[in-house]
Image 1 (cartoon, rainbow, N blue to C red):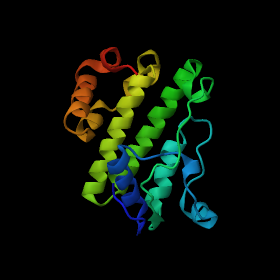
Image 2: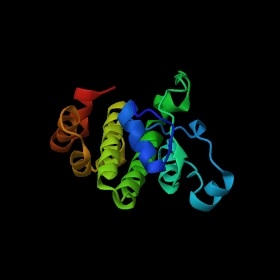
Image 3: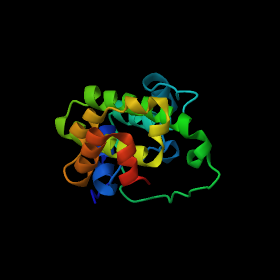
Image 4: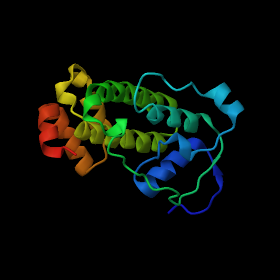
Length: 183
């Protein structure tokens, strides 16, 4: 664990969280932010999409120069069966939203993060999240499934299993990927 509770940049905090826990937590309710900072530095939530916190939280974190990162887990996620986030009826809306959010995230990380090591960690986490989402939601049945940036996912994926999964997606497509790695 990265230990102490010193002040660091929001980007460094996201990278530390990925290193400590395997991914950065995107939940909005897990943060305390100054209202004036949010109003002057961060876009409002994008209305009409699911997974909007997946882009909003990184926008907040990369815009701030100073956060206090606490490496301990402070909550336990409870999955509710009837939640919209777990509804098969909303699959196409999930896919459209994921494609938009992931495109915005890639742009934020690729163009907005100057530190090469941090950019690499964040893009690798982006690739992991994309691969997870493709395994969870049925991209193959949605017209927008062809819009998955497989080449960018391969470039960003870590070595080992994530790289192999990304290569399977790139070489064989979404349907084969889902047959092998469905969640």
